[in-house]
Image (cartoon, rainbow, N blue to C red; front, side, top):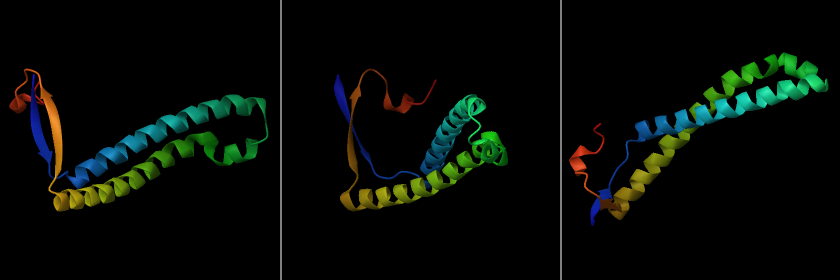
Length: 112
């Protein structure tokens, strides 16, 4: 097997920021959904947070707004982080990446 050397010179900041934002939104949706489910199970046994939970819609508002907030923050931080990375890659001449070639032509990557 031969090694294939590639050099990473630039990453599209908006596309990467979109990916980071969507990942954070999805992860927060899953976490808040899990917390809401557990909160409703344990909240039925304990009436300690009953009034606050009803004001907050029993976690439904958090299930809607937290993923939106995480998407916005993830997008902004992903955009800034990628712009800084691209600046550093430009100043240092890129990042060398070594791939092992195992029978797949580089022009066919991404095809089905």
